[in-house]
Amino acid sequence: MKLILKYLKKYKKLLVLNVISVFGFALVELGIPTIIANMIDIGVKNQDRNYLYSMWGAILVISIVGVAGTILLGYCCAKISTSITRDIRNDIFTKVQDFSPSEFNKFGISSLITRTNNDAFQIQMFINVILRTALMTPVMLVVSFIMTLRTSLDLSLVIAATLPVVILGVILVAKISEPMSQKQQASLDHLNRISRENLTGIKVIRAFNNDRYEQARFNETNVEFTDYTKKIFKLMSVTQPIFFLLMNLAAVFIFYLASQMIDAGTL
Image 1 (spheres, rainbow, N blue to C red):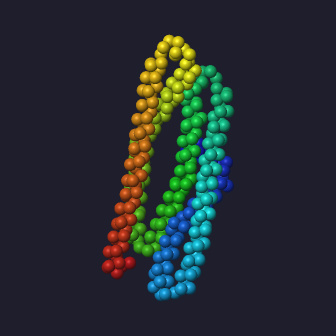
Image 2: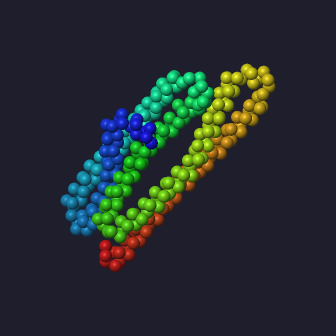
Image 3: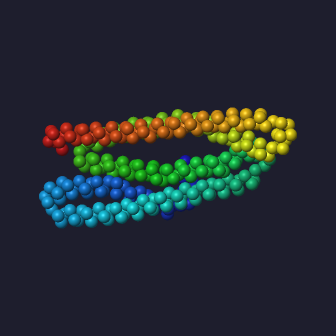
């Protein structure tokens, strides 16, 4: 994370625009449902057409702001993530040029290739998710909590109780996936090394009739890499529905609690 923050400092203006665009997106997601609720509670109930027309205009303005914010968010995320990845690859290439033969033997050429290509791409995807989802989620959560708090303290406590569970779940997933990711990375380095050896020494391999041996060695490493990748994808595939289920259960409980409070006349 320190590495990413180091490169993010070069793109402060784009980062500020990214944060502003996140607020624009949150304005649409939370503002329009609130306005529609007021239109029903006030405009429809009192048959106030002027109020309904004014709220319709407000929805139109918010929609335009939201579309602009979504477009700007996508541009900023893509620009920042790709620019940082470019800078990282340039720095890696420059650093490698100064390596001594012993340092090349220490890190390995296949490992350096992986660092420059696959690892840099993974950082790019991570930054894209951070700038889009990780910034959006706290904003949406805080604004939603404030709006719920204005309606009822009891309802807001349900959201507050859900947060520690979600945070613990994220920490648990990170702890489980970390060793698997390290093993996957090591197997990818091994896979690149075998591929490079077979490409550079193909004449020697054919001369000594070692094709089957090299094929078996490659298949073994490839299967190992595939197994680790499957485990990681399965973990991530299971995690997302569980988090959605948890949030939906919290929403259902909020609706149930709100209905009980309405029946009791306390809401």
